[in-house]
Length: 409
Image (tube, rainbow, N blue to C red; front, top):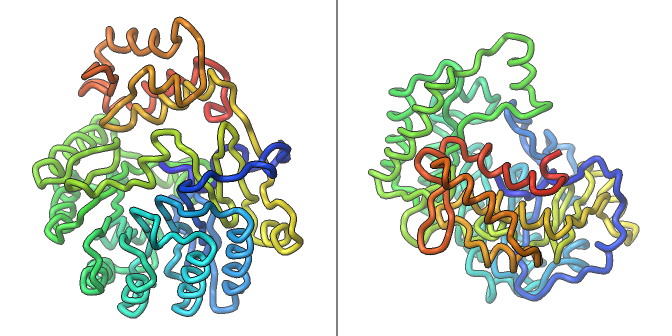
């Protein structure tokens, strides 16, 4: 649930005023958005465009690098290249992207983690080896399912066999840190079938796994199928069984939950995403990408042509910005932090948000949720209780009600 693109106010009705003057501090995490996919998956609401051989990917890479020259932070401590499908790019384009990012940022000597997302149909052995040589240390493979029926429902352009082959390609290229994305609780899916599928993936020994309960996002093809009655969601009680069994299954196989939907072996948490959940600063480059510097969030247009036009004319590319109040920032810090196993330490949340209210309204809310058995307190930090965990979204969003916020719109 990283705000890598499309977060905030993507309709662009609040043009940037403060954002053009903001400079990213040295070390700020860097996100790069590659918008291209072979085709648009039915569940996806990230900004992406179906591309083909005629798509001018080279010009988009050039524009990303032009934006990086002006806006990328020096010495980023993490780099995450997502999409879309970054491995849709050619080997030459990938090399140009990373070599020039290195010249603009020096990431190879500063970043503790460099991640590239990839899809099975476009991760070749040659691209995997090249990415390793270019300084990438972590691959995140969008497997999503090993069930042909579900892959078809999602309109994924790969087979289960290609998914497993992509994992082997990553390992054979020398990647020790490999993450796999899976989606469960899909209409028509049985719990036994899902756990067998999960075991097949765990037998590969990934260092990290993201397991998401299927969400029907507004405006997606899958949601349209739901709204027109052509698709029935899983029963809520069965969906809860999926959630609880998934967590138990992964823990038994050595992958500990560090966020509601993310699991890792020791020392293999995704540092880039942990920064998001801690409500830290970040810079996003590319169409649809979001940045947060200081208290201000701002984002590029969800249009390749509009974004490129801005970059190519030396205009500031963002189409919107928002600066939440200190109370809103406090609520958002709790909203994000409660998704993690480390939880939220109240005084640290006040410090991060710059909120000086006394008494602390978030602490009052946390104590109330603790009295209801939805939060627990350990070592001064609040986190979701076993009872609160399946209600993570509803519990954490209580903190957004401390003050009106665009996140809660």
